[in-house]
Amino acid sequence: MEARAELRSLLEEWVERARTLAGEGAELELYAQEHRGLTVKVYGGEVESLRYAHSRGLGVRVLKGGRLGYAYCTGFDWEECRRAVEEAAAIALFSAPDEHNRLPWPGGAYPEDLGIYHPEVEGTSSDEKVEIALRLEEFTISRDSRIKRVETAVYADAVSEVAVANSLGVSGSYRSTECQCYVFPIAEEGEESQTGFSFDVAVKPSDLDLERVAGEAADRATCLLGSRSMPSRRTTVVLDNMVAAEFMGMLAAALSAEAVLKARSFLAGRQGDRVASSLVTVVDDGLLPGAPSTAPFDDEGVPTRRKELISEGVLVGYLHNMYTASRSGTESTGNATRSSFRERPGVGATNLFLLTGKGTREELVRGVEDGVLILQVVGAHAGANPVSGEISLGALGLRIRNGELEQPLREITLAGKATDFLRHTVAVGEDLRFLPFEGSLGAPTVVVEGVMVSGRG
Image 1: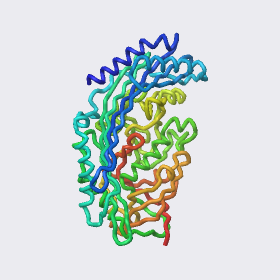
Image 2: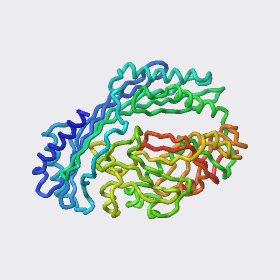
Image 3: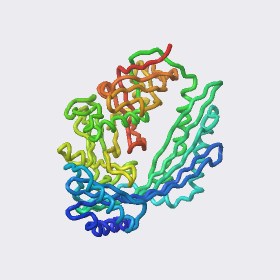
Image 4: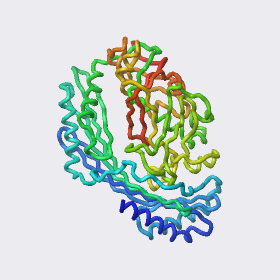
C-alpha cells in the first residue's frame, strides 16, 4: 500500500510541475510502470536457465487542440520526466489535430481489494522457485512410464506496479503479482512420440497445483499415442476448455473497437445482430477477483468493470478506450491497454470469457453419439483470422463414438467460419479455465455441431 501511494503521489506532484512545460491550455498524462520478474527453466533435473528481468519507466501524453504528442523515459526521476514532457509537447505541435484524442475525467473511487497482490511472491527465495520447477518436472515424469522426458518445465513470476495521473484529476495506482508454471512432457511408445501441455496460474506460488499440472500434461501426451487421421466429414466437435479459450483470442481481437473502426473485424457493423447461439454469452470483466488481468482501472485511468459483449447470442457492444469511444459516440469500457510504458494505449481485453453452462467435459462427451474431442490446435494465431472470420486449424484429439472416447487422432484440420462455430454451439460446460495470454482468455468446454473436419483415409 505504501509503495503504491508513493508512486501515485509522485505522479500527482509531477503533473502539477509539468503543466507549464506542456504549454498553456494543454492536457497532460503521466503513466508509470515497474515490472520485476523471474523465469526458471529446468531440463533433466538441472536448471537450464534462470532469468531475472526488471524494467520501469514513464509514458507521457500531451494533448493540445486535438494534437497529441507522446514520449517516454526509462526511470522515475524528475529530470527525465521533464525532458519527456518537453519532447511530447514538441511532438504535439507538429501532429495532425484529431478531435477524438481525449484524456479521461475522474470516474469515482477505485476498488481497493481485488485479490491481485500477495507478498509471498517477493518473500519466496530464488532457490525455492527453482525447486518448484524441478518438482514439476519430477512429478510429470513419474506420472506414467511412457513419459520418457520433459521438453521443458517452467516456473515464472512477476511483480508489477502501475500508476497514472492526469491534469484533469485522474489519479490511481495498484500493485499486482502473478506466478505460473507449465510443462511439456514427451510420451513415447515404439517409434511414436507425442507432446502434452498443462499450466497453472496463481497470485502466489503456494497456490500452484503442481501435481494437477503434471498429471494433466502427462495424460494429454499419452492419450494421443497411436493416433492416426480420419476420413473428412462434417461432424460434432467438443472443444476442450483450453482449445475453446484459444478461440476466444480470435473473438477478443474481433471485439476490439479499434479493429472495428479500421474494418479489420468480422463483427464490424453487427452490433444488435444475432451472431451466435443463445447459449453464447461473452463477458469482459476487469474486476474478476484474483483473475490474471484484473485491475482497478485501465491504462488510461478509466475504472474497469464487467460488461457483456455478446448476450445470449446477440452482439451488444465492443471494447473501447477513450479514443475509440469518442469516435463511436459512446463511453470508454475501461479497456485501454499498453504493452509497456513505451507505447500509447490501444484497445484490449481484460478477463474475456465465455459464460459457463452446465456439465463437465466428460458429461458433454457422453452426450455426443459421433464426433471428435479436440485437445490441441496448431497455429491458432495464423489459422483463426479475426478480420475475415475464417478458421483453418490443424488439430489433435480423440474420436467419440456413442459417448465414449476411442481412437486418438492427428493430421486433421478444422475448417469453417467463426460465425458458424458461434451459431452452431449446442452445449457449453461449467469447467471455465483461463489462459494468461493476450490479456486473459477463458472458456469452458464447448460443443459445436456440423464442423468440417478434414483428414486422410
